Length: 162
Image 1: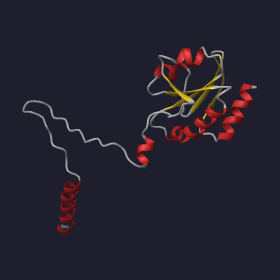
Image 2: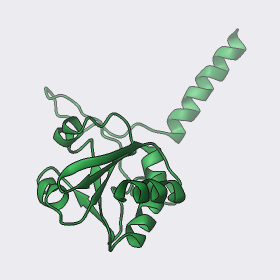
Image 3: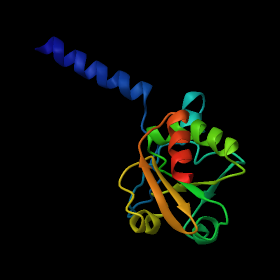
Image 4: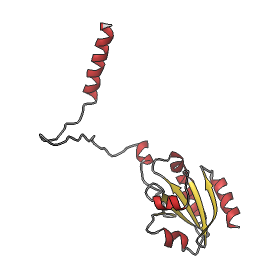
């Protein structure tokens, strides 16, 4: 028993040495707040935490500009509904970017973060991510949910666009 206690105490001391608590800067009588240092992500993590799609063919849309960009567009509009925390949505970004480039003459592609735009999420009852809303003349003509291959997405678009 004493031997396992020493291992636990030495493990605790080792963890405190390797991962020390940040200093607390609260003055007497004030509440303390401990904030871990934030470092810029590197490597694979850097690619995973970037917000939205970084492409000229895909436009990020918000509640403020949704009506003119999506509902008043002369061309059909594909709204790609995402959230920063959604791994499947991040996995779809290269597919969406490729399809947006290939369909640039027929279709406008918008990316909508539903966590940052809850009014639109509720208006269109977006219950899963990634979701796809296809608009023509301001009306939804087709919806889709889940991850898709490029071929599946193009087939769905071709069928819905006639």
